[in-house]
Length: 265
Image (cartoon, rainbow, N blue to C red; front, side, top):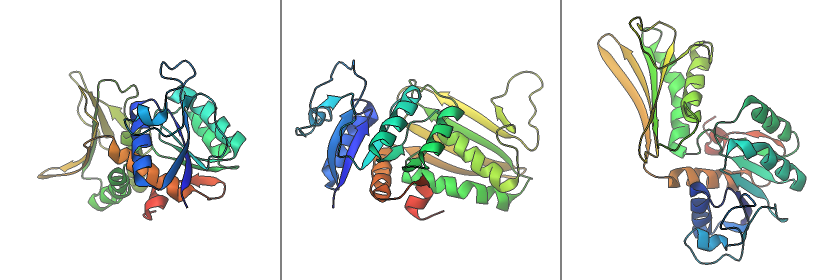
């Protein structure tokens, strides 16, 4: 049975790839493509937006009926509206929008009491494997190893550090007992910038069209161990989100994770 899918942020870069790859997979029936009401391509067939054959689904601003799962890759400002739409239609939500404030995270938690919700700071399958590893590695290495996290993204990314970098730091802190986020040091400058033990350095790069690069550096006197992930294009995030949507279909109310989708946590 195919999954009846609605895509929010369908006219964006991620939304168009979700349209294309969902259609290509054969596992989905796209029943809705949503974006802001004043979008210049409103009314255009979603398939044409994605560079594929017409789907018979126009780009609109209103949530259609008949969906089973919504995938949202849009902007944080619209997160609560997306949550409300899913609650009204009683459909599951896969949210990949990053940079959410605490109030929006709280709204997701409340929604999970009524519908199935999966939020991920990064939908990449490889990145989620990295999430599962970093805390255990930090625990095995011990406090003698300094920890630094670097992330690089395209020049247009608004939030910094990335949600994925923060997730990496949070997983490490949980495993080794550091106080997240108070232990984070965001960059260093000045004449007295010596590294303090018990901190995690966070460093963000914004340049060109970098899709996404994350590295966790564990360093001590005599050696360095680096765990890293590089996204070559957006399709890896899309494939992870589609896998999550198929897994979430039919699930009862609750807050779910990509680790559960992948069977690693």
